[in-house]
Image (spheres, chains in turn purple, cyan):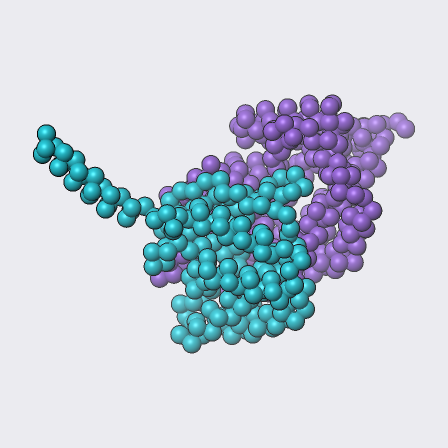
Length: 285
Length: 205
């Protein structure tokens, strides 16, 4: 009933912080510098630990997340699921706005402001994406993207228990979002801390339910699902940081030349990504 | 007056001869090619098509529009350079089988979408075609870019980039991982590809 000012910020981030600490600890234990010549295309010095956590996550996914997401999809008709999805998106409006501003993107910030105001009111608290229908589109945004726009490198690949693919930059961004989210604070200030957990769980189910088929197909047809997801994760994050205005340059279609993943390069992953601003960049928009 | 007419005629004739050469001929227009492939893929690969038939149709499209040997070289990365001629030949064939099986499977869940080409521009060694897949549910469209190279004067697709994720780069990354975990041997990857292709052909799901 009464608010507890001392604890108000501590609880919502506790779970994720614990997971992060665990991940870093595990990563530290297994930390072995990759031998030259063993270097893959992406920065993954903790691959053995990551693969262990990945196996654990897959087991949880198969036995808990997927059945729950399937049940969710079976119980709620598509319009209801779309409304729930739109509602959670709208809740992130303030966070998205802050990131738009931090990145110096007034056009995006304007979109976000209009979206939040319209959808929160006419859109019945975010349940209907009114703004999207009149041509003010949603754009993905988070603190990890902002850090990337500022030029901060991703760091090594990390598989976080339950939460999945990440890296130090994006994980830091996730924690920043937990601290900065106004709704979580509002809820914990007023004694409704459990609401932040409900939000986390339901939006997790929402996210998982939207990728049921895609991920199942990918898992079934992949030779190395871990490596496939790692590649997709890094490429997708790089695209989000470029705001999808450009297309990744093709790293060497003529194979007479050595590939960017040459053995001598200790950080080939960032090489692939940072090449986005060299001459071969192609502006699509 | 007559000389100027002759000159003008000569210039026009020269232009007529020379202009089409630097541009792609209308039949080889990359944007038109992508639109055509999109139309065929999204109608041919419908849910009601039996898996075996879908696989056969997809293979035809894959061979007609894609630079299969070039993509195979790319995805093997540096291991292409160290592979023997026989291994390379085997790999290209296996890759062809694996990709047609994997993608006719991955694409089987889709239905009702349409592909719309939104732009096209010359790229480093060919062209880049931008498109989007519009979904019937009104869900946000998916941005798909097509990298086109010229193979013997004909445009061929060398990469497909979905929402910023290059399928060729993803495939290369996966193959490199398999090879590295197998001690740098290509043979292990090829065995795995054989098994995967056989199992997906058998399951039909």
